[in-house]
Amino acid sequence: MRSKEDKQLLNVVHEDKFTIVTPELEHLDSHVAADFKNAFSELLKEDTHFMLLDLNRVTFMDSSGLAAIVFCFQLTNINDKLAICGAGERVMKLFELTQMQSVVRIFATKEEAVATLSKEA
Image (cartoon, rainbow, N blue to C red; front, side, top):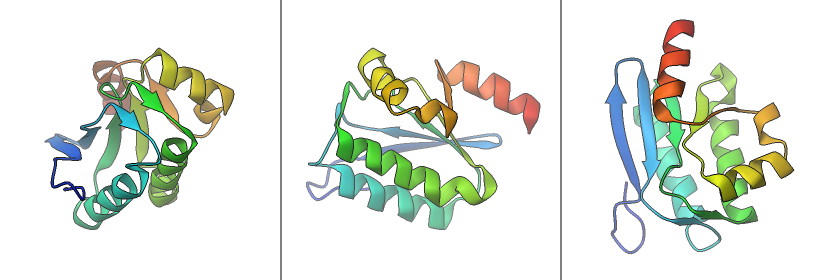
């Protein structure tokens, strides 16, 4: 998936029952939120696996970035196909303030998410 600057926006890895999607950016904000949403939407057209959104590289997220994550959740909500992992302290604080953990499953690490979700699948 490419952004307007032709930089890799999403790193996509298929692992067994999961598709792990890692944004290749430090800031998920108003400057990239629309490109992120478009790239994620395009990915869903090609992929029907459970999506694990790995935010380990994202160090800052504003309300536009949060809205983009909510958009991704809404796209995958029909089949409960999205979980989040790897969110750093600043991003987790935003999730806690907005009570995102009551809407989407959030794991500390990719390994924890895969281990837990593999048992359920």
